[in-house]
Amino acid sequence: MSACTCPSDPDLTHRLIDLTQAGLPLVDDPWAWIAERLGISREQALQLLQQLQRDGAIRRIAAVPNHYRLGYRHNGMTVWDVEDARMDQLGPLVGAQPFVSHCYRRPRRDGWRYNLFAMVHGRSAEDIDRDRQRIRQLLGDACRADDMLVSSRILKKTGLRLNRPAPTDRAQAPSQESSSCSE
Amino acid sequence: MQLDDLSRRLIERYQHQLPICTDPWQAMADELGCSAAEVLDCLRRLDEQGALSRVGPVFEHSRAGASTLVALAVPQSRLEQVAELVNRYPEVNHNYLREHDYNLWFVLTGPDRQSLERCLEDIQQTTGLAPLDLPMRRAYRIDLGFSLEATP
Image 1 (cartoon, rainbow over the protein chains, first blue to last red):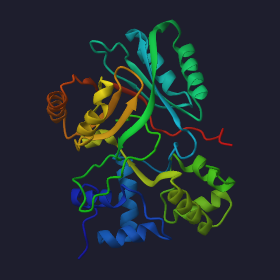
Image 2: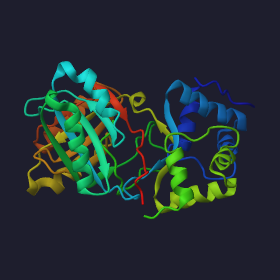
Image 3: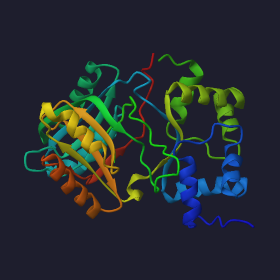
Image 4: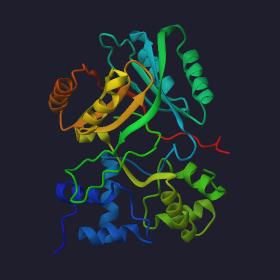
């Protein structure tokens, strides 16, 4: 019996996600390891991962650093009140800075004037202050006000889980990671 | 944490993408100028030390449905209690304490926008605090990692 490996097979895709969302197995042949558990061939396992990335369901397959453990213990959510008409030009410019990990436009609200968010990370408070200063220079007079919200504690951080909860609870305990309110 | 030369080069080079080919460890070894066994050892060590949060796929969040960034202005005296209430929601997958009047910041993720709105209402009822609902309008950069060049 051979399983269907067309990428549109939702069950197979879900099982692959369950199997790999906490990470690939760090074994000699990770594709064989996955293939064995999904009941498909090694080539099919590899193709399925490649296909999911081509389709955009997987953003990247990478050695994802834990910046907090690597010494980047300071993170700041910088927020900016940017003139709406200039956002299309300035948003990508801020997002392109090497020290920015996430950069989003968000709506203003009553009591909340900031419409541009950029996460910065550094080894010291001075590092992230300097990053904020650089963004301020880039935005110039298009920015009417800004602030930086420094993270003082991580209260919960579970990696995003795409599927229904797996039989074993793989949700990680809140960890000391430098993450960033990404969506 | 001090990184040896191979670890630093490995993270720098593969934080965005691993080679997803027939023999990925060998492909990395060829590029890094070492053996596949050394690559695997290095990955295992970094994983165990927590220097890597994972070696594997990062899924596209927007495919998971809807999400939004939410902030609450919580009185200091109620912080622990409200944080605990918020963390109980399975929709909450990040929750940070930040230094600001809006001091509790978390991401809500659900199958669709409606489910998030229900969750927001529920949070408001449970905590008595009005949540600031800040869904993403446009992404200018999403978690591409950043340079470790300054790492001593």
